[in-house]
Length: 255
Ligand SMILES: [Zn+2]
Image (tube, rainbow, N blue to C red; front, top):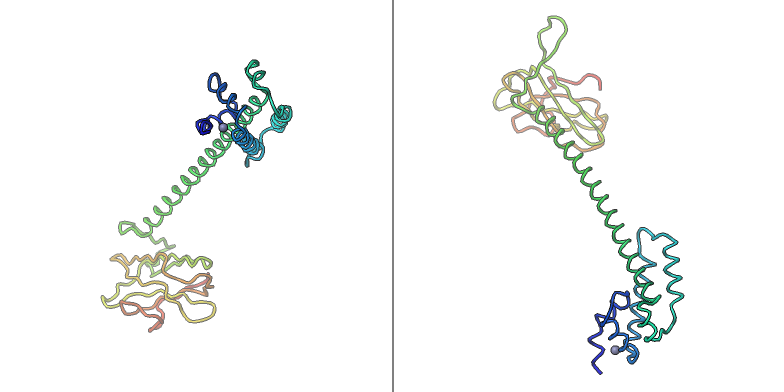
């Protein structure tokens, strides 16, 4: 009564036509007598066919699918085991071999797609790494204490205090470079202000110039999307002010 339990594993191999020789004979003999195993075999073959024709992703060539379906249709409902044994193969076995080949083919193709996708992602990631490296180099150059700043002037005008703000309203990104700034007392600092087209001045960074009068402010915390009328600099206590407490010593010209 329990004999068919030993065939459970072999049954799926048999369904795909992968069972040969003695094992095949044994299972075919058992199938003649056991309706439970015959039903299980039908179920397994149904699963395999469903898998072969409904696999997602790249579709198998229509002609191979037609051939497979034709082979399945030709398969007799019942093959006398004696005849099947004599011929050594059946249309059924061939059809399930074809199903197995198509399934393997689909998996190989999906694998190739995944590999190509992975290569694309790796290449994108390398580009981003390169861009990040360049951004870091630019920032390091701007903020390096070793950086030498040269102010170029026409004629024999003595270098004047000068500030340059580079501002992107949509991202709130600001880079500010100052040169020839007068030294400032230890308890004081210069404060940069964004003067919006409407509303009160917004603090845009504190700075103290180095011995050569150079200062850099990179990416102070600013709200995004603020239209700037101009920028201005005041002298404030070292810890900064939330609103200007003195007249600007420098104000931007033009945008
Ligand atoms: Zn059985």
